Length: 222
Image (cartoon, rainbow, N blue to C red; front, side, top):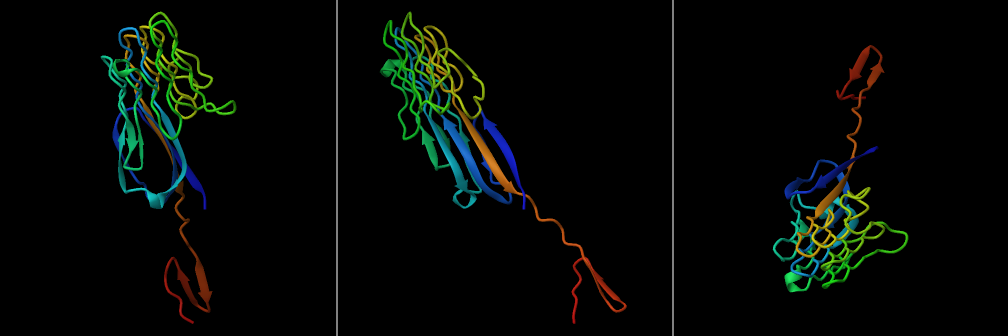
């Protein structure tokens, strides 16, 4: 039996409905980046990636909540999928601009006045990470993995890379980068990949017994 793969990308909140014959999903949840304020950068949003979630563990419908980027010095909003995964947003500069912390891939811290945002990485062999931290006044944002500062929608952002932190006065890179000083954070995103078993092929047969023929679901008696 074959398997069909369906890729779903959410940049705004929605409702997911479990399809028939679903076997499993892969899921990537990223939260909103925090807003920079005065001379301090906002914290980057975090990322959580879950692979091979069995269909039996999933509800028939699930709320998909995509966190918005922070504004007016506030933190970014959390992102979540049903009650299975919840990812906090990056901190706003008005409360220090800390990168979002999670048991996954954290966001970079926003820079203090005159200081760059923090670059975050998941290691040399992995592209995906949380959003970079926003820049403090007069400085540059932090990167996300191999994505440089002030970069939005990097290659393969849908699954493999997140946005860099914004330079001073510039918004955070989408998805989930922290905003530079006096600039908004980027919103998060949720990516869901469904693995659906193909329907079985219809059975069609003809059974010949003497002069009688039985076909397409009739019952044969011997």
